[in-house]
Structures are given as C-alpha cells and as structure tokens.
Length: 167
Ligand code: SF4
Image (cartoon, rainbow, N blue to C red; front, side, top):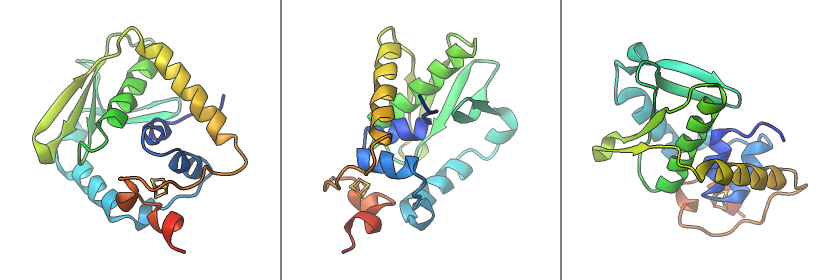
C-alpha cells in the first residue's frame, strides 16, 4: 500500500475526486483564499507554539505541534465545517504514534476563531476503521481517472473549484 497522508484521509471525508487529484500531484492550494486563510490562522493563532512544541515526522505524516511531555497532538483548524474529517485526521496521527511505540497519546483539535477545542482519543474500533479507510483510499488512487465531479456544499470553498467547474 502506498503511503497515505493524513491530508488524503481528511479529503476522503469530503470528496474522493479531491483525494485522487491531490494524490496525483494536481495541486491548486496556492490559488485558494480559503487555504491561505487557514494557513494564516494556523501560523498566527498561537505565536509561542513553535517554541513549546516540536514538529514530528511519522512516516507519511508531519505533525506540526506535538507536546512530547504530555503526549498531545495539537491540530489547529480554521473552521469546524469538516469536523468529522478533522477528527479522523487526528486519530490517524494517534495511530501512527502508537505504531511508533508512543501509546496513549491524545489529540486536541483547536478552532481558535470559534474559541472551541475538542479532545480526540483513539478508541478500540478506530484502528480497524482506519485500516478500512486507508484501503478505500488506496483503491481509489490507483484508478486511472479521477471520479466524476459532484456538486457538493464544499465545492465553493474547495481549491479545485475552478479546475472542476469552469467550462
Ligand atoms: S470542487 Fe467539488 S467536485 Fe471538485 S474536487 Fe472540490 S469538492 Fe470535489
């Protein structure tokens, strides 16, 4: 199975066409105001964070802010419109940490603009679900063509909007 990044897992909850395009190197993030806005929130919400927490590369995943002392993954998001995708992205980090010998880590999803946080843990059934999700993505990205576009609520804010919808 090729290495599947947490970003692809996140996208799998949003749109499989997006998964395929991203996995095949078609990137449009640089054209997206929503992505730029999210990056700004990520980099500026907690200015001291980079000094307190470390960056961790774990196989296909890069955790930007890991609190090694308390075993907490901090994940900052701009909006909670894709909460389920965010939860599974963090669960994937926790699973990869476990596979690297760091068991019992937890995640903290942070929405600074909403002043909201959510604690994420890896539950008993999650490992099997993650394996299934990764297999689904693996099958999807080996398809010769991307899935057809489907009009979704998220399309307007998606970095592939012009790519998919401008005729
Ligand atoms: S614009 Fe819509 S159909 Fe196209 S990749 Fe994004 S979410 Fe999927």
